[in-house]
Amino acid sequence: MDTGLFLLRIVVGVLLAGHGAQKLFGWFGGHGLEGTGGFFDSLGYKPGKRWAFVAGLSEFGGGLLFALGLFTPLAAAAIIGTMFNAVMSVHVKNGPWASNGGWEYNLVIATSAAAVAFVGPGAASLDNAFGWDLAGRGWGIAALALGLGTGILTDIYRRVAKRAPQLSSRDVQATA
View 1 (cartoon, rainbow, N blue to C red):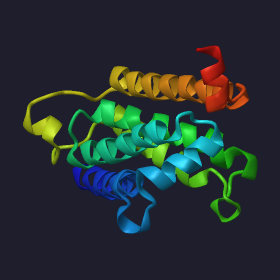
View 2 (view 1 turned 180 degrees about the vertical axis):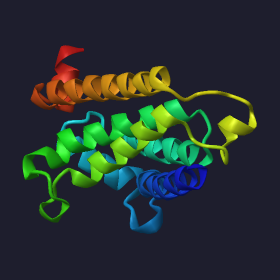
View 3 (view 1 turned 180 degrees about the horizontal axis):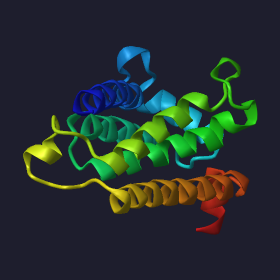
């Protein structure tokens, strides 16, 4: 079981960290904060660059922590929240299948993170090396609640910001 958990954590964590590095640094063919920020703006995350940083940091940091098995429930929560927002802002309208731009990939990543939060990161983890028992039903529920809670709140913010009228610099100067 420990070998399986190690493989799952490494593959999911390192690939998700790479996905976050695309947003943050433009590595691996990514668009960096400027390009990703513009895309996030178009989705309703205002200001887009700040939310691109939050998403990139959640993926990069959450992925690294997950791969290391360090603060595993927190890493899982970051992954769950980010994947929830990816589904709601981009993929939900396309149905489940990734071949159609759907949400299946995001659900697999979030479910993998949740599962590891419930069972723990295994023996080959920093949580275990430090003697921390951050596994079990309570930790899994906490990771799910934090991830879904922050994901839902962020999505509500996005929806409200998307509907808010955009003020031009002329409008701002007129009200000053």
